[in-house]
Length: 225
Image (cartoon, rainbow, N blue to C red; front, top):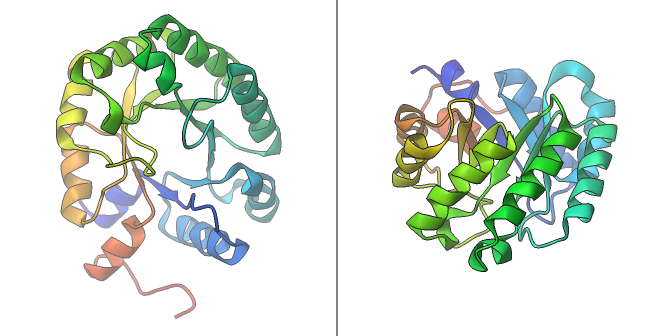
């Protein structure tokens, strides 16, 4: 798989709490130059990026991030505002307290509500695999599928670990045919990127994908030297 193919699957990500505009701008410039699938940025930057870059890139943002236990109405308000500001993709975090209390019906209904709000825009559902048992992961595959979401996503990148190949393979066996997989967190090499895609992921959430490909000599030098 060549660099362009890999980058076409990358959600070029910067979600740290201290992200400054200069860092967001650099992320966006790289996304435009290398044609990444999207930029995944904090909600507070969505409108500014939309104003600055228009239709040059796809804007993804996060909802209920990173812990997921805000109430559904708050997540709906976040989603509505993000879409009004110019986001085209939403990565939501599920309520893990509902999972641990066995309230999978509540998880499913929340996903369904956010997908209805998103409409034709892409909704990715972050399940934070590091905190889940295998049984919980399987049940959540069913929730995501029945609720009509577009992706199941492994991780926020803020948990105790990120994506693992075993989770991608498990998801493949249990999601519906219309659900795709996003691996996020812990992608530390070009070989990791290739392995997750070969295992069945369609998107890669990473802050380092461009840098990894640059270090491997597969793409050009840094923008502005």
